[in-house]
Length: 278
Image 1 (tube, rainbow, N blue to C red):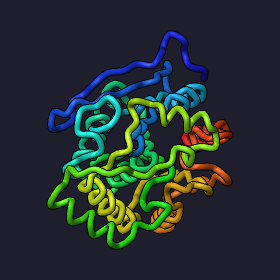
Image 2: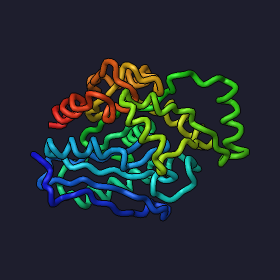
Image 3: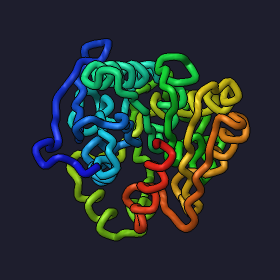
Image 4: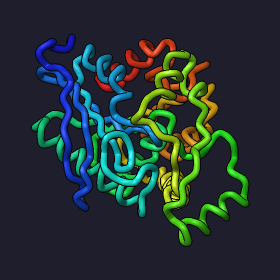
């Protein structure tokens, strides 16, 4: 089903549980087969998921995406949260909005990178209760092991100076094999590279908790794993899949970089994602 030209992308804002204003985008289709709810990675925003959204539209699926607090056009200190629970609440508030606007249509969460950790955490914790969900290169572990001293420093400053931020050390050239993607990312005014000591500590704790509890998963999950991801260690996703057992389906992408929806050959990924959703 092709997207109706009368149903262009929409934007709006909503309030999270604590009143923080969150910006969202939607790419609707008439009579959607399901709604895919995209949760982005660290330092980026919902607008970077338009290519995914348009492809899903062509397969008859609507797509919604939100800017988490501290990112994109949403309110909040850049790259900082006080507690992981704040992002969970952002996710739940957005899911409630999407479901309210969608009636009885199924809403399928899709989390990429940091967003993958967030979606898995929300599902395993019972904050989100989808029938199924998708994780794209979830950031359970970085590709390069974090030195012990840096972990200790992060824990210490998380308590003493929680808002202290540092660069996330992401090289845009490692996002996609398409050089235009890297150039657009580097020039995007809504993208930032900040991560606070508190957010770092909360992410590490949430990732460990998700991997520990993966065996409790009770709904189907599609794991999209790029074999040449040099930002995230794919072994974290594979460990999640092993522990989740037959609830997890792994889609391995040879040669792909961190952002499969923005990489060369993305059409194959879109086709396989749509096939799993069907």
